[in-house]
Amino acid sequence: MDLQQIVSIPFLLVGFFFFLAATIGLLRFPDFFCRLHATGKGDTMAVLLSLIGLSVYEGFSLTGLKLIFIAVFMFLAQPTATHAISRAAMRCGQEPWIKGKAKTQ
Amino acid sequence: MGNFFLYLGMGLFVLVFLCLYRASFGPGVLNRIAGICAIGTKTLVILLLMGFIYNRVEMFIDISMVYALLNFIGTITAAKYLEMKGEA
Amino acid sequence: MTRVTDDIIIRTVARVLIPFIQLYALYVIMHGHHSPGGGFQGGVIFGASFILYLLTHGLEEAKARMSEMKAGLFSSFGLLIYSGIGLLCLIMGSNYLDYGRLSTILRVIPAQARSLGILGVEIGVGIAVMAVMFSIFFDIATGGEPPGGEESFGDRDG
Image (cartoon, rainbow over all chains, first blue to last red; front, top):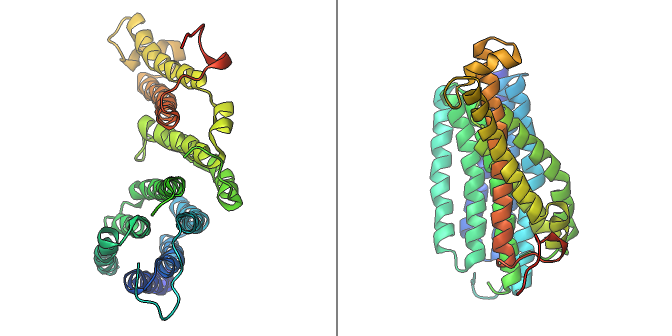
């Protein structure tokens, strides 16, 4: 096990943990906006960490640089998509959930 | 190291099915869009892990970049359509 | 669907990302030999970048950058490149799209002539696919009405 493998395994494991947390949030949260918080932020961080881990494993080559490009693109694009969905929800009249109300969508 | 990637890929595959629950049973169309976006993100990482398992990363990297792009454009299109339509 | 987005975040991020998406589409077209890609895939990505521009910046600005007439011209031009290379091989005395005969024009060995011939064909296919994708989306977005004005070919009544 050389240095590249030792450094890349924690990145991948923490990335998988963020994926797990985001999915559990997507299933269990009581409101649409809460679920959008979970998947919008959690998935972005998870993809970023996973791609950095894979890039460290691959080394300094063209493939490693391309993985960094994908990571930068996801970092820019995924929060924008989340913002677009939440804006559409506000325009449609979806109301945020206040604690005490019944568990709606 | 190949075994580690395999187990990680299988774990992500189970998570995709959990997201599919929200994509199919979510009350209203907005929950479904959020579920599809999450499925697309996990699929991208699964593709890259498969490239590492089969030792042919150069093949799978371009495909995953295109999938990230199409996921982004599709989510923005669906959100814009709902905004114009005006009801959930 | 075709109004300008009144949201500055989506408009700015789309404006930043669209040139890089187009550059990536050109990379996919050029690297059809060595990695998954080629003419059709690169053309689809290029067309998707135009569709993103139309979604975020509105119909009028997209029409100003790429009108329907230009889309039609581009698709015909792509087809002309494809068929032109095939007919050139036919003129040189061999079968249609047999690129080995181009080696006398380009002064390279036949294997390299085949590689360059396929590259030219892929570029033609990419241009045609890009124009057709944009044209289809434009037609669906406007509901099929003719453009009118100085865009139309000749006179129209009704």
